[in-house]
Length: 239
Image 1 (cartoon, rainbow, N blue to C red):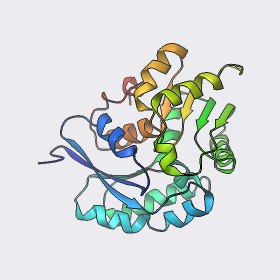
Image 2 (image 1 turned 45 degrees about the vertical axis):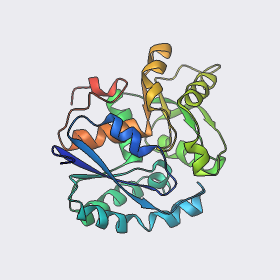
Image 3 (image 1 turned 180 degrees about the vertical axis):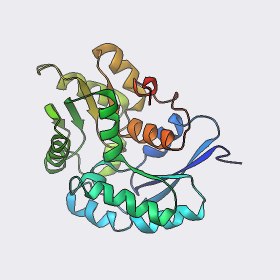
Image 4 (image 1 turned 30 degrees about the horizontal axis):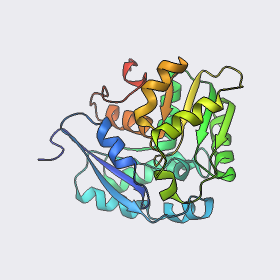
């Protein structure tokens, strides 16, 4: 039987081709991932706003699967309107799905807090507007974004076609000439990057958080399941 220890319900954009596989990789034995999809093809503010209207419908469908926790797996979709919107989204989905809920933007905040990261180097695949919104979101929490790079990709399937090596090179280039950060954040649940976290941490001697590593860590710890399969420093934290 799938999910004999726990079932994670995952709400993702319809064009996301990365989050399910990366969360499944991060999940230990006996934990299964079950996705519901919201329509989205282009990653821009208007389409993300429209997509969010379908989140509650997805939460209702995941409730039918008797999931133990729901993860809203879209970074910009959960920070689009800043702090307050993210927590409201978690609360609405939780009430509908009748189980705990985490939203990626807040999961990232919790992960960065747990790691003590205040000076962030940010790598995104997004267009300028969304990257700027993400910088604003992080800095609302009294962090400093000391370096930022966005790839200016509009189609979500093109984001999903990037490779972990792309993420590695983007981060390395980002840090080539920058004041020393104390943490790196690779944004977007559709950006394949989980598999290079350990390599980046070893090469740069800095903690690295990705949208999917933070989401998986937050979801698993919420249901009291071990997080050892998640790469990077997050699993070594003592709650």
